[in-house]
Image 1 (cartoon, rainbow, N blue to C red):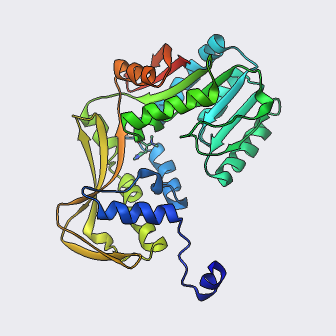
Image 2 (cartoon, protein in one colour):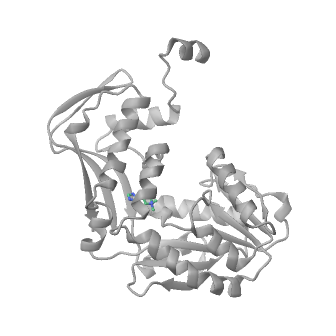
Image 3 (cartoon, rainbow, N blue to C red):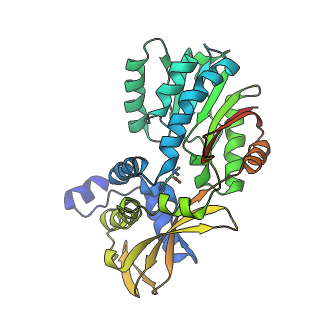
Length: 318
Ligand code: AVJ
């Protein structure tokens, strides 16, 4: 069946979960598509470009903070343990932690086996003394860690304020799953973006060069490409909004005129001014973050922030 479809050139190569999320998300009110679908090849490239934007403070702030904080983490946690990263560790942040903590083992966990193997190979070459043991899997659920790290103390690493993509209840579930994967007595180093003035937050998600707008609109291009869509790109514009009630940045694709289109053979309509909600990025003050972590089974033992109080790192114990 698949082979025949490929030969016919009719087959869309889309992930069935992508198709289901898009069709359900466009039919729902309010319309919403999960942010995880931003990250095809093009979307990942655009996100990399976002991390270098002058307005996008989180990546550079957290990276600079890690340079000073990781030696202190090494003092608190000790060397020779196991670092378990939730996400594939393809960023510049992982080497900063590994250089300071000098673990015996490094376990990156990611759902995308391809990304995972690439970054595992790169890190293994850069750190010949560290046993790199990638685990392919969904870290939203409790996972079995490699037997090789058996008795080693564990330090979880979850940078980037990735936890902010989840609503608080789902974030608590994730923190609980991490606690179960790592085990009682484990440590966690997590980066969480702070609540701050909308005048700083909005430009970080609506930059002058329009890179974030392209990142958001790439989702529509991906739908058209992979799900045989006919969404008129010129009928949507990027919108970043600060939702003060829920302490989160929301990204939307807002219809600038009434439009009708098809996706995967199904008809959809949208009126001018209505939106497709594409991302939440929740922000947390110090007390908010401690409460979130506590609900997830983690007690904060240290907290660090940059001089402008833009971004925070927390060391917590299970
Ligand atoms: C990767 C989820 C942390 O929320 O800041 C950046 C994603 N979206 N610009 C964030 C993102 C738009 C980013 N996270």
